[in-house]
Image (tube, rainbow, N blue to C red; front, side):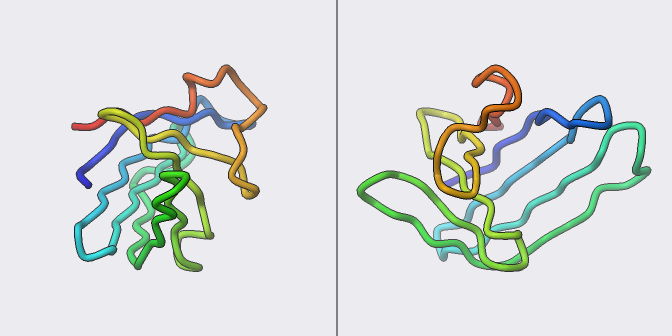
Length: 98
């Protein structure tokens, strides 16, 4: 658990500044801001499910069911099927622990 931050790829902007905080009680807060398009981040809060076998967390409907793989000191955004994103190099989808 902890907070993770980085800039995810964006198809029509220079990036999506993202911060994800995961709490031990299975709640999260997600801050997401399209760089150059939004002046302040959008905030999503809710609960998440952790699949202990795969180390993949899935956010609830408030977080658009986004999926992230837990790694050492980082999380990696996955596609809706729990697979690696394909739009940019794999390291572009990693948020580092802060």
